[in-house]
Length: 552
Image (cartoon, rainbow, N blue to C red; front, top):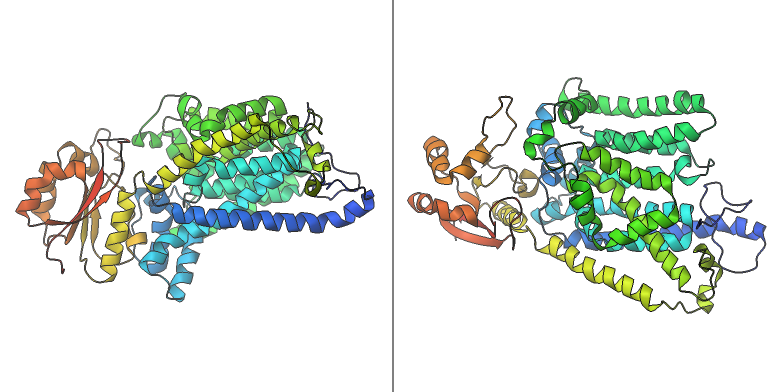
């Protein structure tokens, strides 16, 4: 059963499914009016998604993963303001400056307009990311419409906006989030995905190359799509010689020049990234999971209650290309020891398209005026003259998705692990008023944002966790976690020329350092809720800020 609105003979050249509002206009009238109508529709969809994502960005108050701050914003802040911390990845040349430069542009704009206040600096990056996210939402709609028609596109967009993990993660400043946007945009322009060779494939190639430049592991996705295109295209030599090589060389050359400018020497980031993460398994330093983790836990948690709908959509749509893309990405990433949810984020929207397909099939089957074998026939019914009535089955399905995903999205965005963000925002405000002289973070490395949020050039110290080239050597962060009191007494306090004005720690370590705190005349000034349950270590229920010699 194929559920797709075929393109009219006189349809637009972009390959998108034609939209028919159910009137009896002749094909020439439909053809001449379609571009303007599609443009207006796309504009409305984008503005709706943008409003949603802006609200989404403002609701995110929690800390998810260090890379959100340390691999993008911290680098951008150092580039623009001259201070910020570069982690070991930047010293070994395994990160490209292309992604941080987007936020460097934002910071420069805020600096020139004197808007770089603590509040704006903490909110602006996610608001900027919300624009990219809305663009990704729009292209998910356009891709779904091109594949299956307007009804599936509408339901796919609903799934994208309702999914808890997309709400929780998509507006964060990870390179994975921009990679996800570029993946959806790129897929829209690949003929092998849409079965439409009138689309501009060079755009698809350019976007794919850009995604790989931002995050080299994106090559896993585009290797699959590129090989599929090579197999199906009638002119393979033209595809390789006149499109792949020139476009790839252009993007690679630009990123190499940018990295040459920023690093001060020639650095081939994709090669260094490949050597560290794939050839030497360097990522395993940060923990490993069993091979089946993405299939048995990771991706299922991301899909959550959309899982059965995605599986049903894969089966019923019979779109083997996109289904195989999801399985391909999950399988390749399963071969790596170190696994994270965000690594497979780029294929989550693809899986949600299948959820939209399953809901659209329910929608079509539930309408007495439609044939169950064709979802897109619903577009033939004039909507203004027909009251859409959902069946109990569809209504319960939608309510179930909303009731399960909305609380999860809000809890994870507003409550779970928010203490480290709140503490840094508080210290930023205090430093802005001149009440903070120096800060020591006595917690696992990279547990909080850093200079990009504090936005004041004062001495700060955190516990380092740079991977050692000597196997078995324990880093500062782990030594502290094994013996907090012994570490701060012997390795930190003994080397102080001046005490830090503020110390930040989790409540779980506070109890172990009580004597040290009293001995050095620190007193609690603020306590922030962090989490209701533990994640990787002991329950880190709250974040505590201690200070000495502060002005009341």
